[in-house]
Image 1 (cartoon, rainbow, N blue to C red):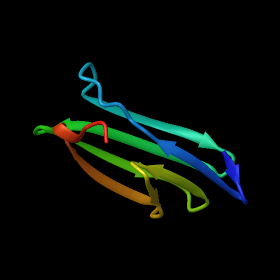
Image 2: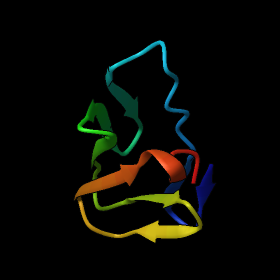
Image 3: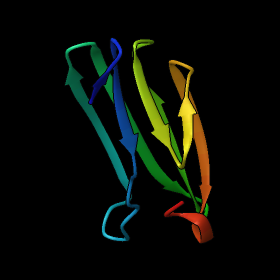
Image 4: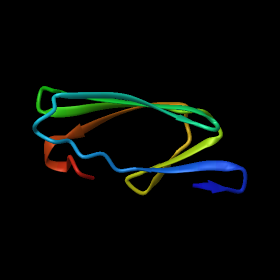
Amino acid sequence: EEKCGELEFILNPTFTDELSFVNLTYKTSRGNISISWERKEGSVLMRLEKEKDVKIIYNGTIIDKEINEFTIGEKNENS
């Protein structure tokens, strides 16, 4: 969604048991958004790369940095 000159995405991944990893790149008018995640030792490691003009909201928080890494515990996997 375009708002005031920036592109906004809401990131809401589902960590399904059928997949052990995901790696994708989404091309936008403002540049690429790259998201990858993998299961490791009972957690999910997620990496997000974006252009500075792309606003991403994850778990209710605005992601400002261009490169982000998260560790998500299994008990909180959908949050």
